[in-house]
Image 1 (cartoon, rainbow, N blue to C red):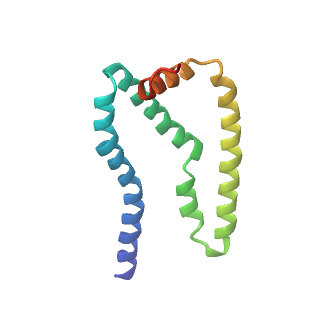
Image 2 (image 1 turned 30 degrees about the vertical axis):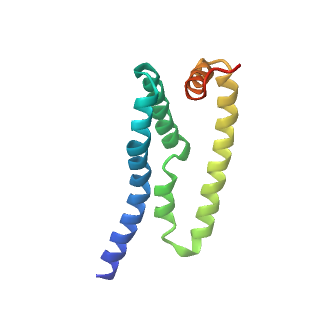
Image 3 (image 1 turned 120 degrees about the horizontal axis):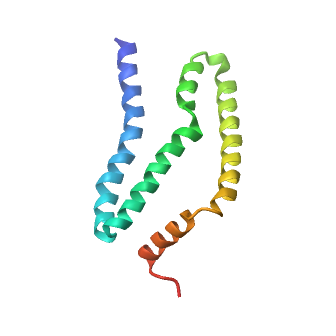
Length: 124
């Protein structure tokens, strides 16, 4: 029974760590956004959230699953962890540099500027 209770507690911790931020986002930010923004502006924010979700999957490339799979062997746990951190660090830096160069050409900066103007008022 000890292994099953351990599995249940680990599942609860891992699941709650995923669910609580989403519940807070929906419970706190959604009512605020729907009062603060027009429907079109709220659509832009929703689209940005969709991009974030896709980028999160792409940038982490399922490493948490790989970590859990290969860290079972306690003698290799530190090696697995350091390899994952190094891979994520290198790929994230490369992605940030690439996107920084590409975004200078895309209209997303005007979208972000519009959101900033709505939240804080127009500059000047």
